[in-house]
Length: 396
Image 1 (cartoon, rainbow, N blue to C red):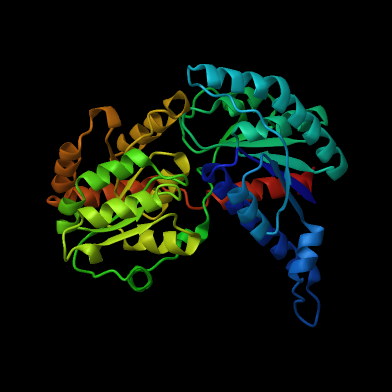
Image 2 (cartoon, rainbow, N blue to C red):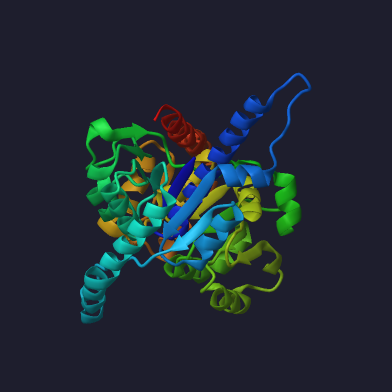
């Protein structure tokens, strides 16, 4: 059994792949346990044996963060060139687009063709993003069955183009746009079930929380969100007067944010501010457990995690996101009463501060949001996707 995974390279693509990988490995282990039963009991297959029999591969563009995470899951990774379409209207972007379209994308398709030809996988599972285009196209040429997952309510350009080559398209939203209804299967967004296992006690110990104030968790995505950081810094003294903050700043922004915070925070309030460059899996599950409210961008992976842990949220969609998909994601959740949406163009630090105060002076509003959020959760999405792929391979 061989499966090739592919995706664009960001955390929004890689974390769902990791979730599906873990579930497939668990299903395979259960299958081997059933097969190995005898009168003397069960013989548990060794991890090395499982890796050899269950071939899991990833083909995609170079991204050290993604490749390391996948390698840790026992996935064999392989790099290809992949062209990216930039939507900025300037000469540099135009030149880079020409180079990517004329050279990188064709080279990536050829690389993918030969890698897939020699691997001979049973299927390809694509999470979308520009990095998946060469792999899926090469796989179609080789007549390898292709399955796609789309996280956003408005699909990205790559998945929109590649949908015609897919046997099935797993979607996260009931009213996902653009795809043929006959191909769509509503699954939700695959998430790592491990993030659901945090506890308030462990979170308090890990982050040294005081327990004196409500906790707000601020997430800017895997690369951080500088404008969200600036918004928080502008009212940081006010925030720390009433709340305790867990703040993911992004790797690139961490030093700058921490330096500005040290100057801004009034004496005696330092213990209520906990900045981090990036929350690893062990940290994010505890951060979710501790949070009374989450402030975040509106990438589908992130908002489905927030739903799975049942937390109310303020969503600040990234306005530059392709096709405005973050805005549509955010309002889809807000329409169910699960989140408050604040768009950047209409937001000032004072307006944000007033909205935050409004929510925390009305605990029933927060509780209604929490209940609505929990109803939107699809925590078993990764398992459902894995079972579908697993059953397809058994029947094929």
